[in-house]
Length: 420
Image 1 (tube, rainbow, N blue to C red):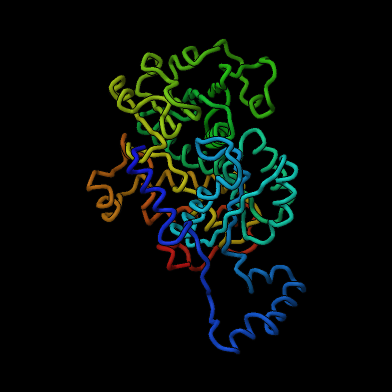
Image 2 (cartoon, one colour; image 1 turned 30 degrees about the vertical axis):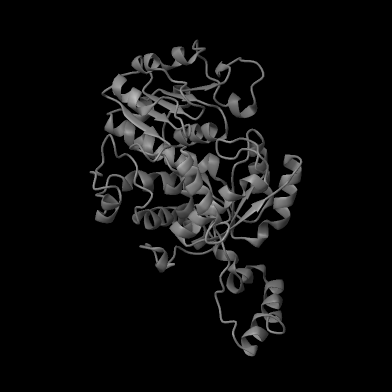
């Protein structure tokens, strides 16, 4: 990044007031009567009602429209383990996106925990404060233990966006790319370079969407994860297939799709050249992808290329998912975010890319053509239709699978946050 951009980023976070979040009042607090209702003695009435029935917290407090973004700071973006306090700008940013795109009030919580057990205990004890919890920037493999434990112990939906938000958007884009390339999902051979939390979630959801487990070859820093390889974690063991491939060069030969969730410049032009006709490459390492898009497109003119960057076509961006998924989850008061809800989000995002983009979105991207094809496999984050499409699909899936406490909302489909 240039010095000019670094200064702009720091100024953005420092002015006009430090940080990106604040607190606003939602009711009158001007007169003596207002204050007597807001606090003592009036506040005693909702206290009694909630003590009588915990569900009344949704009626008398902000719980139902509030999500906590919680981290231990052990895997901050691509910066690594810099501690919980250093993660605060990222967590504030996530909360900003919840509010901006889905009208959800959000707070950031940075937990200084010496181990996963301490983190789990801390979050479990405070979880019921909110309507849902978004876990963020927690390193693997600890994130698996943490998420599973909190899902089991907490009464509110738990969602690790680095895993499942990434997976939902990736799978939506991958399904569209494979369709455009004329490939059958059940037959597609996919190579996943990376075996962390995001890779595990992406490949698991790909299987849920129709990819055959035996057609996925996963690699970690030691090479191909194959059946019989020593010292595999349980999450890697799930993708240990019987194969003679041991290196990326072995695995990529003849593959239909490459999914990179690893590090920069790990896929060479020579390896890309050996992929099947009309390949799909998702090089999602940020800020530097597994292969530079300019090099990739120069190497294969039959390629569909996606990255995590906004300055190239086909950005795989979690903001296409998590605000709207939580919107649907909160609006039916779902107690969990299950596989069916994730796949509903996949299909909503996937199908939206096939519709004509709104004029305001096209204008916002400099007037470039945004029609379903090789350079437009996912909607743009500013597409206002995402709120209604994804939230509605997720809410319906929650109702259909029995995890919703409320019926499908009468005010759906949403058009903007003003409809909430």
